[in-house]
Amino acid sequence: MAASDDIDLAPIVVAAAGAFILYQFWRYSTASYGFSFGTSAPAGTGLQSLLNDLPMTVSPQGRAFIQSWETLSLTPYADAGGRAVGWGHRITPQDNITGPITYARAVELFNSDIAAVQDAINSSVTVALTQNQFDALADFAYNVGVSGFANSTLVKLLNQGNYASVAQQLARWNKAQGQVNSDLTKRRSAEAQNFASG
Image (cartoon, helix red, strand yellow):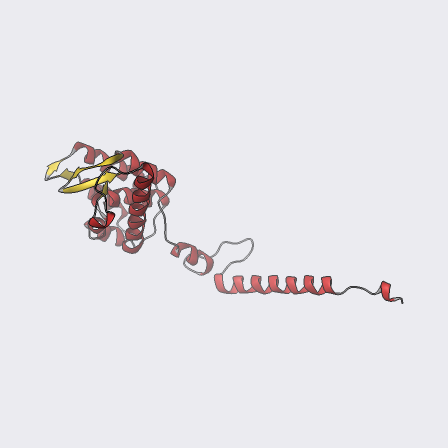
């Protein structure tokens, strides 16, 4: 046989090596994560467990819900013994805000506040949440502050599996300067409805 008729084995070797790697990955996945084609992973094990452990984030609808209750102000204003700006961002000395801010800065502050809220919920709540439940708690935490949220009776009862107590606990947080506030009452009611919608 002439040299020009020799079979080039390189593509065959590469294809075989690729198939072997894919096979090993599949074997590792089924063994480590409990995944198999045509069936779902058992809850609490394998791949499903990994997915459940991922931190939740506020959905776009949740962000819009929060912003619907917080009037955007590019000029700092007095708020509960301090000053706020943007979508209800409490101004700290580290913010270095002395006057009006841009819309872009307001978005930056909002995103930072949302990140803190997400961290607070993910670290404080130990039971499973749906997206609507997470978003409802995010609005509550955004409004009362992450410390108030994390140390609340609401979180304590929720972590005991008492989902039904959330609406009642939310309703307790409807006062401003010791007086019942109609806007806060409406906000807590809307949060409770979102939480109950599952």
